[in-house]
Amino acid sequence: MIVYCVNLYVKKEHIDDFIAATAENHKGAISEKGNLRFDVLQRGDNPSQFLLYEVYESEEAVAEHKTTPHYLAWREKVAGWMSKPREGILHTVVCPQDRSLW
Amino acid sequence: MIVYCVNLYVKKEHIDDFIAATAENHKGAISEKGNLRFDVLQRGDNPSQFLLYEVYESEEAVAEHKTTPHYLAWREKVAGWMSKPREGILHTVVCPQDRSLW
Image (cartoon, rainbow over all chains, first blue to last red; front, side, top):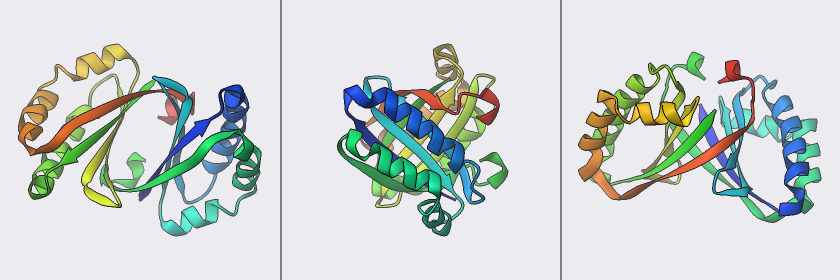
């Protein structure tokens, strides 16, 4: 399993649009075979900053995600709403190692 | 539900000790009534940097966690292994809203 934490910086006037579009992407992502989680979080100290917590079984599953209609639609939709480019940070899993706990 | 993302910076020579101690804390934390997840991750681009992804049902559950023997033992054990203070960042949940998906 691998985890991408993606930090996103959203223009204040597009926070609601971003939430609606990202909820759609979440719904599609969690239905992918190689996806284990796709949590969407909003920072407590800054409502313009979001975190996607994306867990996949492999890099191949991440690559597959990037070809899906829900991802491509989301990427196009949100592009103009960002105040700066997003940052994706790859992590390896220490715990839990048991796939059933994801 | 609330999510704390805790960034930890570990001295290189204590990475293995830190992983062992944090796996114990993970085991205790996920058995707490108010805890929904306690993922332990290591950054792909920097093995000295870790992320705890801690999901609780409420701030009360977070406060309760901080009184548990596993947390207190962990805190004491790892204190000398840090290269700088840890940072905990509170997030609110956008998706999934359904508690059963955590």
